[in-house]
Length: 199
Length: 225
Image (tube, rainbow over all chains, first blue to last red; front, side):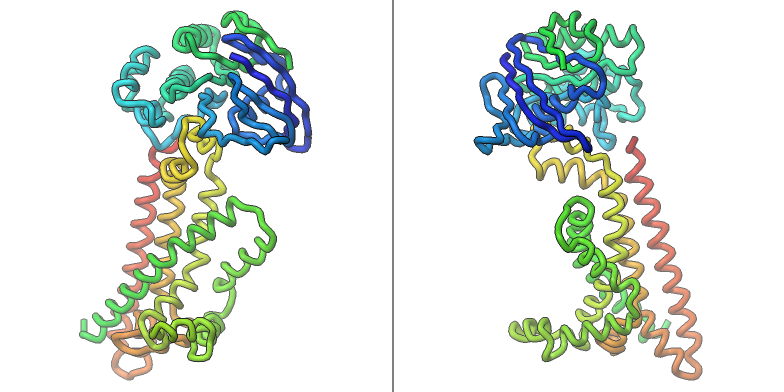
């Protein structure tokens, strides 16, 4: 999938230019922490409005300051797996997975089976371990059937074994789905056979 | 209890109930705007909302009397549709609502400010429109604040005295709420018993409301991280 980003964003007191382009099934943004990777991901998802520039994903213009285009986040059709998972604390795992309107009960059950979280469906997010939380977040994003999936450091703070397992799940369950993967660990990107973009 | 005492109780519940329910949407809208929006004159809106907290209630009642009086702007507007709130229970409800407003806005605003807005962003990436995000994420997560504000407002509306006395006076069966009735009984020799009974009842209602609010709040936060 083609990604073409050239934006100026404000984060706190800093203004930063971010520009990159790629055209691969899996694109990985790599670079040191605080380098603007997360800002780029948030801007692509429609959660951070750039001061200037343009964002095109899969040939679709999502943002273009000059043309006055700014597609709202809920119409961008991009799934996001956030670093902090962001599960809804007042909803059960089942309701979290089924939050997207496209996710019916049968799809939720099938996805839970695929991700090995079927036994957790009636639990509350605060009772989940770190690895379980990530898997629910991954399933929730996939069940919205997005055109592409954006992942922001999805393995952060997991021990090596759980990180490896989750990376396998991501690679498996997101097959045929374009990925934009943000990480400071180039190894993760290599494991996904990603086109690397340094920021 | 005497019929006069029952009458005061019923008037109080009616006035406080209507005042709280009618003020609730306005209070939430104000809390939302104050918590989420930046605009010129925000400090003035904030001060106006909180003014009844610090103004002598007599002054608030007097201002209401001017605004809703025969020559007042709101009084004339209501008169043109054949409505007057002067010396009516509806007027008592207005006075109670104005006095309760700051106590209702404050917990709702705190809840909105404390809420993790990144959850709203996450819901948007799942395809939820702004309204769906509000109804399914924002509202349930700030519900404890809404409950706390509503109960505080109701308790305040039940206890309102000064503004009500000035604005609509104390007419038994129409505007005479519990505190006004207690005051009236205290003016009459030999009616201290009635005053004491109503005072105890006021304490009971207020205490019950606070306990209920805490129970609801705990229920609402049970599933939060």
